[in-house]
Length: 131
Image 1 (cartoon, rainbow, N blue to C red):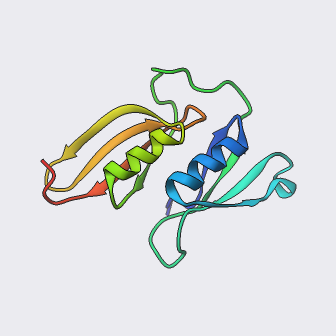
Image 2 (image 1 turned 45 degrees about the vertical axis):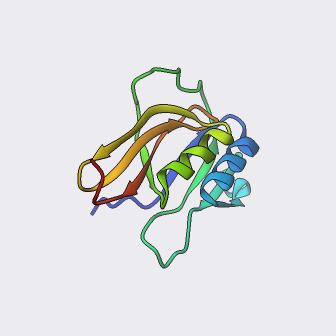
């Protein structure tokens, strides 16, 4: 079975990326650089007893994505309790709006942003009243 078990976020500035994801989503980081042979920080994204996966920040090996470029990889979406407060934190800590909040009718609020490293990600707040 091909279940997703790990993700990697490519970053030009590891400290800036750790601060962004730590402040906005509360992630914790562990230095795994010695094992990887390059700057590599394991990302603990939440309580292991809850659904979800952990991942890592990896030092970008090439050019960052250009603004407006089509997605050429996976776009991860993070579940949040409050869309509006999470959006405020994203913007406060250097993220940029890619696609504004919209309703998935009867299911959730969804939107997309660029992190401080230019990577695209989404946020998703369940809400049966979304319309």
